[in-house]
Every structure is written in C-alpha cells, then in structure tokens.
Image 1: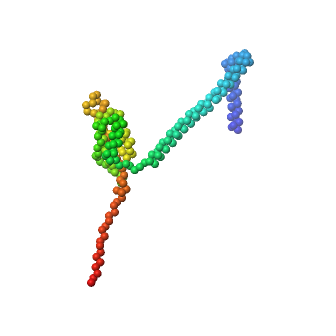
Image 2: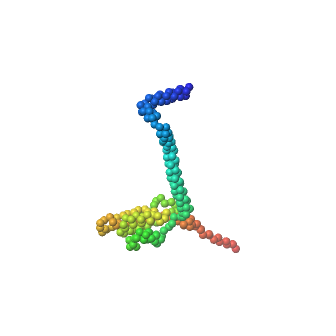
Image 3: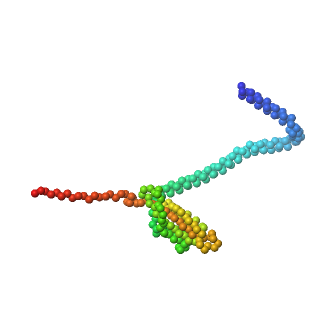
Length: 228
C-alpha cells in the first residue's frame, strides 16, 4: 500500500540522516569532549539542554496566551464602548421631540449665550431674519425659517466655536453657509475675521394648521306657505 511505502521511505531517510550526523566531524568532536567530562558536568549539560528545549516548546503557547489576553481586553473595551453608544442613541431617540420652531427673540438669546461663552461682546454679534430661497424638497407640512448671524472681529477660535455651538443648538437647526472675511484694518492681516452664518430652522406646522378647515355651507330656509 501507498502508506506502507511512505513509512518505509521515511524510515530510510531518517536512518540516512542519522548516519550522516554520526559521521559528522562536529558531532564526533562534541561526543569526544562530552565523554571526557565528569558525570556531574554531563548531567548538568543534559539538564540545561532539556530546560532550553522546554522553554522553546513553551514560548509559543505562552506568547499566544498573552496575545489572547490582549485581544480579549481590547474586545471588552470595544464592547463596552459600543454598548454605551447604543444606549446613548436609544436615549436620544426616546427623548427626541418634534423639530422646534425658533422665534427671532429665542434664537438671539441662545446665540448670545454661545457668544458670551467665547468672550464675545454684544456689539460683535448681530442677529437678524435671513432671506433666500426655501428648500424645494421640504415635505408637506414642514416649514423653513432662515436667520443670519453677523460677527465682527472674531478670532479663528471664536469663529469655529460659534459655528459648532449654533449647529449643536437643536436638531431642527441647519448651518447652511459660513462666510469668513479678513477684518478691515487688521494689522497684520489674518488675526481677526468678519463672519457671516446663515442658519435654517426646519419645523413642522401644528396639527391644527395642517388639518383642512371644513367649509360650512349655509342652509337655505324653506318657506312653508300654506295656500288659503
């Protein structure tokens, strides 16, 4: 059979290799030196060789075990982070309300609060109703209102922080456009900027406004006259 032939060939190869090793000068010189040593030294060398072989055999599984511990810790960390993200998303979804309609007064107050957090003066912020075409893709019942924020003599940090602050005020607010220009008279140029933000407020009309008003037709009075 093929298996028996393979085993016989393997035995022959092993015998050939063994004979070559025994005929090697290095092996013969090693055997001579080893046999000339005392029994205590021979035992010590054999013990050290066995320990060395055991270490070689054990190094791979130990390294794999350490790697697995690292992978497990990383997996647990990612798992915990994923659970936190999912939990946050569920809470955010459960707390979500209808898109908020902002009046100019409320919008001014919230933007002014952002400005105070970045140390802006009231004279540096100007907030007014915006203009421009409304989005043509608005669904039925949705409305859009625009606001314009004019900022004077902002540094770069104030300009960026204000943009992020306005964007994160509400899910119903969309930062449509930001225009930054160098502040006139700034020497050297590039330190202060005049910034214009265009913000769109998307909201849904109240149900009372969405429901079509029923037209009440006036009833005609019938004249019931009896003939004489």
